[in-house]
Length: 92
Image (cartoon, rainbow, N blue to C red; front, top):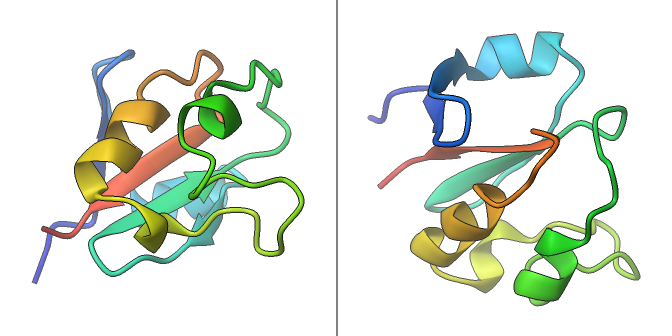
C-alpha cells in the first residue's frame, strides 16, 4: 500500500487525497501516480501540455493520462506548475 499524501516541491507542503478532493481538485488515476487538477487555480502557463504532451493533451478526454509517461516524468512536469493547479500522489 502507498501513502495517500502528496508533497509539492514548490511549496514544501503535503496534502492528502481527501484534502485535494475537498479543495476542488479532480483525480486522474494512473498505475504509478495519480494526478490531481484544479481548473479554478490554473493560470494556463502551458508547462504541462508543452512539457509532456503524451500525458497532458487538451484535445483528448480525459485530458490527463498519467500512464502515458514514467512517474518521474509526470511528477517533474507537475512540479513546474506555477499555480499549484496540478498535484500528484506517487504510488511507487
